[in-house]
Length: 135
Image (cartoon, rainbow, N blue to C red; front, side, top):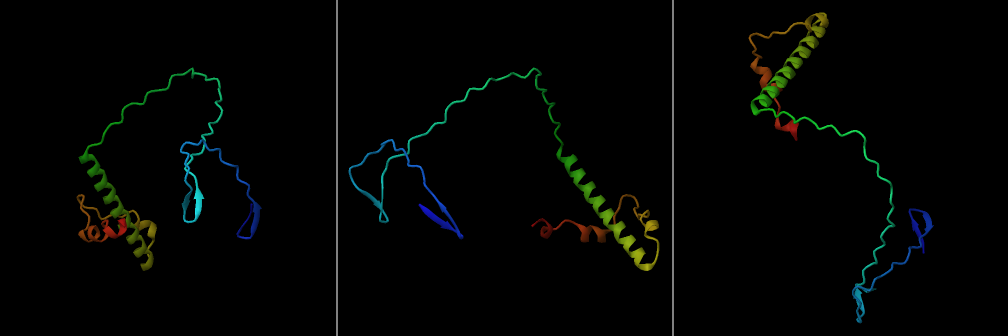
């Protein structure tokens, strides 16, 4: 059978199916004008290949059980990473502002107005994770 696909011409000669006469019928079956039979294709099982199996000389190591992390620890890690992210953003904004004013940004990168673990509330509100960033 000669076929053409996107300008490429090739010959397609499919191998005939071996049917096993699983459901022989005496009636003529048609679907949308095409005849078909209910026989299933015969199963062509591949030849079994026997290969020698070599046992491993070294026993596989057993992994130690993974320690579970508590919910409180996960919440603490999330809060700390968010706090570090806000701190990094504040430092970047400070160094950009210093560069715009004409100061040395290397000097301002050492400054952090961190007093008793508190971050300015304006930064928490504007840099918090939002539903828009997740979507």
